[in-house]
Amino acid sequence: MVRRGRAEEVPAEWAGYELCVLELEGAVRGWAAVRSLGEGESELLQVEVEAGYRRRGLGLLLLETALAGTVFLEVREGNAGAIALYSTLGFAVVGRRRGYYAGPEEDALVMEKKKE
Image (cartoon, rainbow, N blue to C red; front, side, top):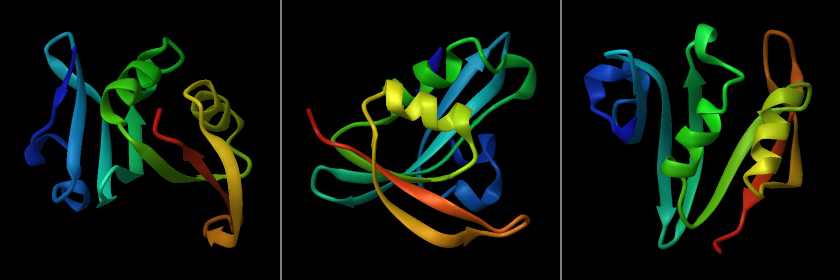
């Protein structure tokens, strides 16, 4: 079940944002944090699915519920699984941020999903 999340259900740094959580077997198994950018636009800041629950379509379910309007995100260029998931949802690469990530340093692809 995907529902609106509460601050105490996610890591503290994401508590001030719009939250969606994925609850299974009586516990939160995934979550997404979204920031509003203005009317009809938002940015996906973080999405997590617990390791034992990945690759079951749960991330897709979580994101379909969490995202509305035109949405932007950054993703590591080498994260093929995440890029494939976002592409399935209608995101397209619209830019690149060189050296955006550290540990290891890697470019970020900027992706956008336009409001339907």
